[in-house]
Figure 1: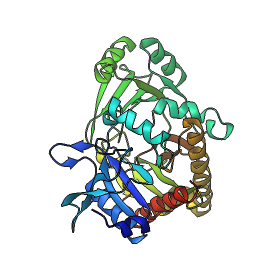
Figure 2: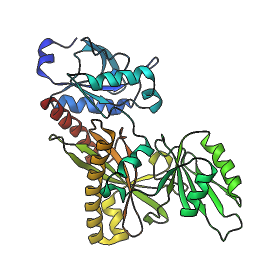
Figure 3: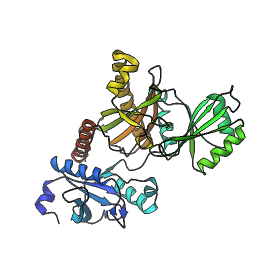
Figure 4: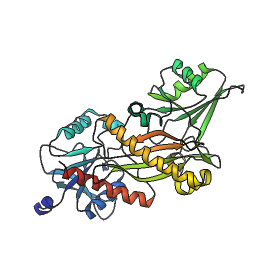
Length: 369
């Protein structure tokens, strides 16, 4: 049990995740270890708690602290947290009724703050962005896939499309469709596997729809206008931006990275064969130094506008998000995706800032309750 003196002296933050009967709790342990270590260095008491063990009407709370490394954890009793940092790793966990009820109880609780309570839905994201003149122009044309007629309509509007699962993560389930009317088999559907893709070719839209139906397996999908991204050596890339709230509660850019598609991949996600690149080195090769500076300024401005618009649309308390922005061959910006549970950025400087900013924002929440 934490001593009374320690309990009174330190602000308390809990990392929320899910119970696991074999491993005690789910989630990225290395990430949790680094968050707890940074919090401790900044004067916070931080622990991991599962949705099952978080009892809002009683203290102490049963939680977890690491031992000397990320592989050994021990269960202890802690005070009720002032701030809950939601890191539930999977959508299907968050959708469970007991978990939804627990999150809703946290949102209503008078003495604590929870931020980023839910995963984003891709269709909702584009709906929120379309409500602002500033962010609407950054969004590619996006429609819901509702049978063959919707596919036919989008193919007429754009011969280059992406098909994306509404609730997808890390490039899972993405397909790319190109229609080349001068070819004997004009419809070419590329289907992403782990680190490569397979291509299905057909002359008939009906046959194409049959294959898409098999691949989507009844899941909700979006149809999105394809963008010809800037590329190097035939490998397109996009920008991965981390946006977090500061100690003043204001959205600010923590860092900008670049992700380049793998040679056989249709997405830039690292788990799908993508590579980590430095935008400050990559962009000048294609656009020159002067235009690169202008592009990166536009990226910073667009990302903070998008974050504000998403928070406004969601009507929830958000503290961080990562987003994917594309730069097309003319240097124009496009928004593709935002994630309310950002994965770790591998760039060391971005990673260090991101960990510190978690607690800058926690400090803001605690000071403004």
